[in-house]
Length: 427
Ligand code: PSV
Ligand code: MN
Image (cartoon, rainbow, N blue to C red; front, side):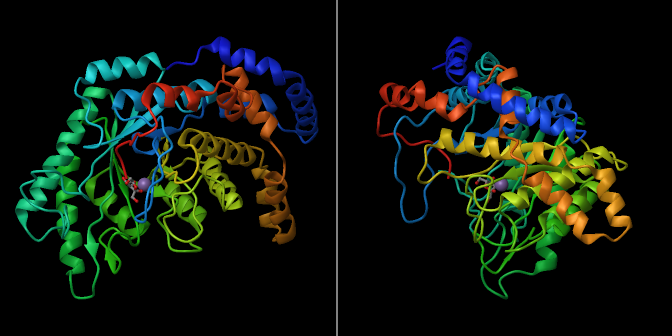
């Protein structure tokens, strides 16, 4: 199903008066603080976040999964769902595919379908953490790090096939996340496992077209619980450096031990020009994959504050970043959940854009800790929702995307066409 611009416009008519009032008031307040409101709106309008093909259905835990109905079961339907989100928000103009969950049978047809929704293909993701039916060798004891050369070459070959699929779709990057590691002390020779992983990654890297980027994710535990081969950003950075200039670190917000200072990691990686992109989500305990901004919105703002600073002070030529949501939806409508995540990302970005870095540096130079802290909190505590809504409206999106989604009864229509008993591929 496709949402027509007229449907969004007529929804906007129902809330335009109260929106105008709030936006006018906020705009005046910000202008008095010397903030270029038009510039901030333009930055928000330009900001696009990719939706992963595996996050459009209900997720689940190892204890169970509760279906929502109307979930997409084919790649075509998944693209249709991203199209719905993009039509309502105008901020999700890309999809990221996980292979082999979503292998396009006819890449050109899939490309055309995506283009009809104004969607492009973001990074392609390989999967060497699950065995596929009929697979010659198992990934049970690792993939790119495996002790057996035959398994390593199977995993390398898979990554090469993923690159081929990406090339056919117009993707320009490959994201590698490895489950490789060990669950018990003694199981793995850390040094040899890392060295084998580097050799495998180099082979994948060398296969990529020259204008592609390799993003290397890290994660401290799960599904292995004693060690992972790429456990942290330092290891990812080491591997990226060894692979070459088109290899970068990818920060998934859920892939850190509790209380890790992620904003500092962002700052360091940008300083070295090695930050490739983000997987956004939120968490209370581990890799919970909750809605972005639902648990630690201040942390999200502090991360964006470092990103904006890094973008504006880009002496290391860090390339433009790849932005993607990597969340799971166990109890909420996935499309609503993704729109909540998008709003949280846009809000944190907008808040970071109104930080006066020149003043912040003055406070830092004077060691005025109180003022430095207050300056950041002041930006964070400014309610910029009307500004984000204005950006959406000006791009042709809904002032309130979730309210519009409900008004248009989209989930009901999806259930009507796809049925109640549906499962989307993914985790
Ligand atoms: C692993 O936890 C991860 O964050 C990686 O990005 C995977 O590719 C993704 O989740 C989906 O399983
Ligand atoms: Mn991830």
